[in-house]
Image (tube, rainbow, N blue to C red; front, side):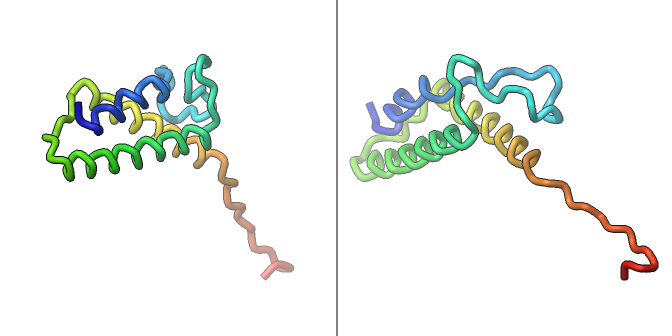
Length: 110
């Protein structure tokens, strides 16, 4: 078994499955994660970054050791799951940013 495949085996149970939302991405207050794996967006971001770093390092190890490219299509579904979670984190982060206030000009305010 190549190291890259083992990284997917290690992280797949740790990374939550996104909760389907019937309201679409315009409802950022909906839960991002299932209740059985409560995690803040910051914690999830750290987990996803750790996965990406481990996967990159594993590819390098496999390349160095002469292991063939062994990406399993079923395991690659984890990358799709991660993309959905990262998109939802972006939506949550964008909703936290305060809206810019516009000031109307009046005679006393130039």
